[in-house]
Image (cartoon, rainbow, N blue to C red; front, side):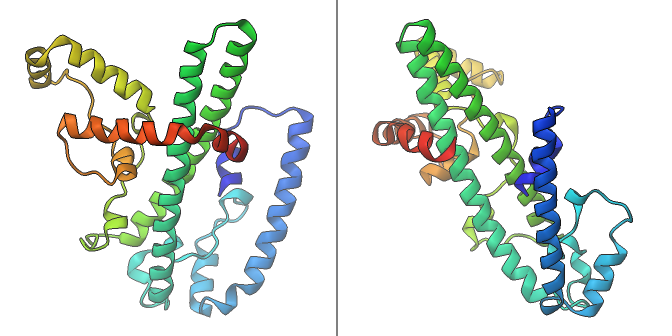
Length: 257
């Protein structure tokens, strides 16, 4: 999944990068060969036949279907004996979605720390290094953004036309991820500080015109386990999280970049 996202989104390669990608392709071919060799232990012969029929000849290696229930139409799950496997895949993908969001939270927190460091500390060398680290974080956010939405698409296939059970809160919390959701809390807090400085009346009038401060994106509400909309409550939750965590920047630098 990660290889597919990077293959689609990266810029033209140097010879070294091309060779590195070809090595990755060969590893992927080996993994796919092993996977398909064992696929008969999981799927019925009818499901394997349907999977083969739905795969166009000469398709790119990175677009190979793995035979997950989400690779089939939901109306075919009963006939192909995929109902139990679909439940297992759904639960695994819900867990993967929350794990992916956790990586994005940590990276955006790290970016906030780096931006603040760049503003606080003077000097060309420090500023240049901070810019490099910020670009690295942005690339990581872009990668996990793509992985999350790939996973979200599969979850939507598994859901089909059915409603998500209200008791399955980890699933109901999830939404499609948009670029505007992946904002730093640093920016959000700065914007709200500006509006607070303009006074309550100006804030109310701007909100009525649809021009007020942006609400906290849903991905951060999951992190805070917070469902309210009251500005003071939201800002209090944000401030408490930032004071307690200090972005965990050293850990993030060592484990995620």
